[in-house]
Length: 322
Image (cartoon, helix red, strand yellow):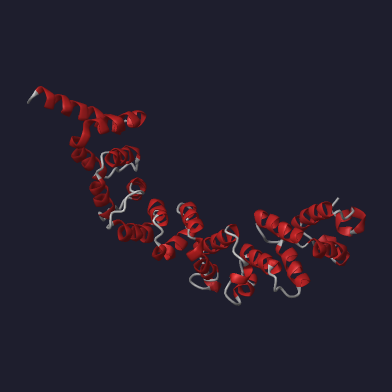
């Protein structure tokens, strides 16, 4: 074997050894890149070899080196492979590598990628695939992006994509918020998380209450999930066409009994946007027996009284919560 070839092979072997050593993966990536295209076959073998321990860092490092060497075809082949792995630990590791491969192709416009990454987003809720679809404004992928709102791992990526596609995402988000699965009486936790997240995105992007399909907010205000119902009531109260605002505000106050602490802050902020109504509710508090009120109500009303300049002795609620 010629000396130069032996030297190249030795350098590649050292690079691969560094890639497999967690403390030296960064050095291994640089060394593999320095080997040039000759490293691609070995990196491909490493990429496609499942790791029973679920450890993904070495294979993710191989993805980084392959991307730097311009080996897009290898990464696309890896994404397209079936990866039917029975062991759950090894499967999680491979999905992490798939995610890295999808992110490594973020700038690629290869015509194979839209259908391939949409399939991965639909079947694996792969965050990297979801982000690629958003970065390339693939509006046809909206259904799987919205479905990903119900998944704790994929949700941040889905939210980022939806923020970038507000023009086409808003109608789909309203529909998703009012679509419990499998139905309203037997809704799954995943469906609730998806619907809460859809409403949160609508709030974050500044969706107007009037843009909601007719009857949607009224439907959501009667939802069995207190956080969803409270969000809908806030939107109704903020709507220019809202009728019977005092009744809506009283329903919001009642929602404090069951709402999440963050939703309680949203309710407080909503009532502050309607300061005149909030003042009248504070003065009306004498009709409510303090013993029946929750601590959440006390805290919100005390803060509202302080912010609106209502003195404690103007309402028994303030006195009752001292």
